[in-house]
Amino acid sequence: TTIIARDLIFRLGGKGGNQAIAAAKQGAQVMMIGSLGDDSAGDTYLSVLKRCGVRTDGVYIRKGVPTGTAMICVNQHAENTIVVGLAANATLTAEEVQAQQPWIAMGNIMLAQFEVPMEAVVAGLKMAKPMGTTTCLNPSPWREGFPWGEVELDFVIVNEHEAEQLLGRPVLSLGDIGWIREKTLSMGITTVIVTRGGDSTLAFSNRGPSLEVPTLPVEPVDSVGAGDCFTGVFAARWAETRLLEISLRAASVAGSLATLKAGAQEAIP
Image (tube, rainbow, N blue to C red; front, side, top):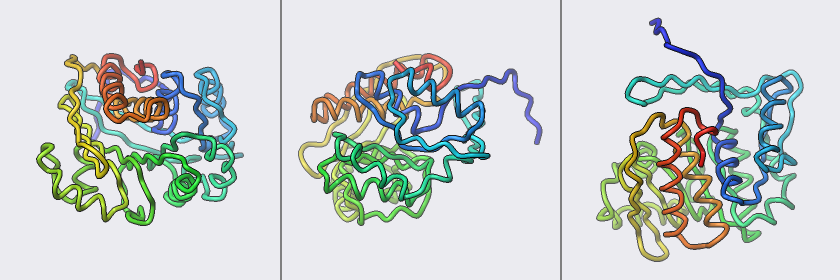
C-alpha cells in the first residue's frame, strides 16, 4: 500500500527522552540512562538533552550504530500510527544500567519504559527499590516478557489499551477497584494509573484512596507524546511532593496541553 503524505517533519522523540525532558521542564533534576548512535541524530539529541537540563552521564554512545528512529504517521483526526526502528536503543544492557547505581540511589524516583531491552528495565527497577527509590513503569510500547510479580512497582502508568493488555480486561470506571486490586496485588503493583485520552484519568491504589482526575477540555492538534508528557510530569511532581492527587492533576493538565502543538518534545509545557 502506498500512502502519500502531505508533509514530512523531522523531530526529536523517543519515550525515554520525552519523559526526561517533560520532568526537567518541571524543574526536576533528571538523569537519563540510555544509548544513542554516533551519528548526527545522536549528536543533536545529546546536545538537546543537555540544553533542557537533563544529565547525560548515563547515556552511552554506540560506534557505528544508528540512533533509534520512529516514523509517526498522523491522520486528519490527530490519530497516529508509529513504526519504530530501535537501533541503538536495543543495545542497552542490564550491566550498563547497574553501573549507574550511585545515580539511581540518589534519585527520588526511577522511571522506565519499554523502548529499551527488557533486561535493562528489570535490572534498573529491581535495583532501585531496595535503595529507597520509588519505582514507576510505563510499559509502553506494550510487549510481553516483563516478569510481573517479581519487581516491586510503586506506579504503573498505562493508557486504556495497555491497561486491558496489562490487566486482562477493559478498565471502565473507579467501580472496577475490586478486581483491579486483586490483580495488581498479585503483580507487585501498588498503584496503577490509567490515562484515557480526553476522558478523566483513573488511579487505582492498594494503599489509600483511588482517584479520578479530569483532563483539561482542549481541541487536540496532535496527541503524539502526550502520554510521555503526562508520565514525566507525574514523576517530577511525585519526587517533589509525594502526593498522588497533586501529581496526577499536574500530569493531567500537562498531558492535555501537550496535544495543542505538533511534535512530542516541542509541545511539552
